[in-house]
Each structure stands twice: as C-alpha cells, then as structure tokens.
Length: 120
Image (cartoon, rainbow, N blue to C red):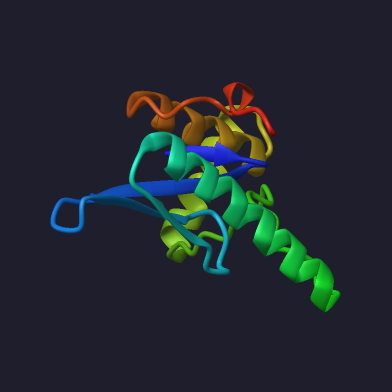
C-alpha cells in the first residue's frame, strides 16, 4: 500500500507487461496509476491524486474524502441486542465499544494504527 494525502493506493505487479499498476481503494471514485519502477509508481500515484483533486475543483465538485470515520453495519436483531448488552456490560456507549472491539481485531491482523498514518 502507498499513502498520499490520506488516499491509499493498492499496488499489483503485472509480470507479463513488466509494470506496476495501482488503484486508490478508500474512495468510490476511480483513481488509477502505473509505473515501471517504485519511484515512477509513487510519482504516478501522487500525480493521479493531484489530477483528481484538480479535476474536482475545475468542475466545482467536492472530492471524496478518504475515511470519513463513519460506516454502517447491518446486524440481525439478535446480534444487535447482543452488541447493546456487551457495550452496557462494559460500561461504554455502543459506538465506543464497537470502536474498541474493531481496534483489537485489526491489531490481531497487524494493520498499522491510524496514528502512524500521516497526511502528506
């Protein structure tokens, strides 16, 4: 993964074409980039994000912001009840309890904490 201005790019390598290619993964709009070296790929990624921001500005549109901090989870009524009970037993609001549980889950799979992700 690469990060620029909080936009995350997922990179793959095409062995047949001998080229790296990537796509920004934390917004719905499509931003792609490619390069033959790591330096070229990084520059193409940053240029593509900048092009996206300029394109939005030219059209008078607000660019999608990565990671709004909100997401919706659909649960069955029984799962919902159990989450409410677990949060209550822990003495926390549901959103705080869910955030804590999710943080523990991502730490188990070794995803870097947000505090280490710096905006450029």
